[in-house]
Image (cartoon, rainbow, N blue to C red; front, side, top):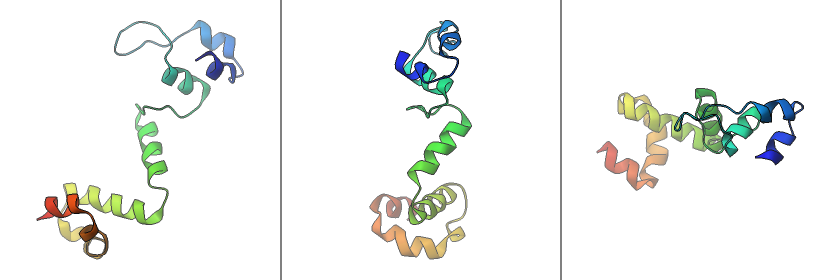
Amino acid sequence: MHRILASAPDAYDLIKGPPVNERTGLSQWSGDAAKRAAGWASATPVTVEEKVEAIRGLAADESVAALAACELLLDHESPQKCPRLRAAHLPQLPHSEARLT
């Protein structure tokens, strides 16, 4: 944690003021809290922005991103939303086939 915070320009000020841990209610540093304070990506995304960035990283490949978007739509919308993508990719994924039938 100290190595992470040392990379921040205001490291000494940061170390003096640890954030409140939401689980314990105590002011204390964790690895993820230090990464957030230093402007790094945390291992466990908490905020909406962190979650979106994590998804973006996982779906960097265009075909993965398209299939993931279609899967998310299929969970909430009509299966007809992505018929071409579904026909091209979902037969290769047994977990998706089972859910769609």
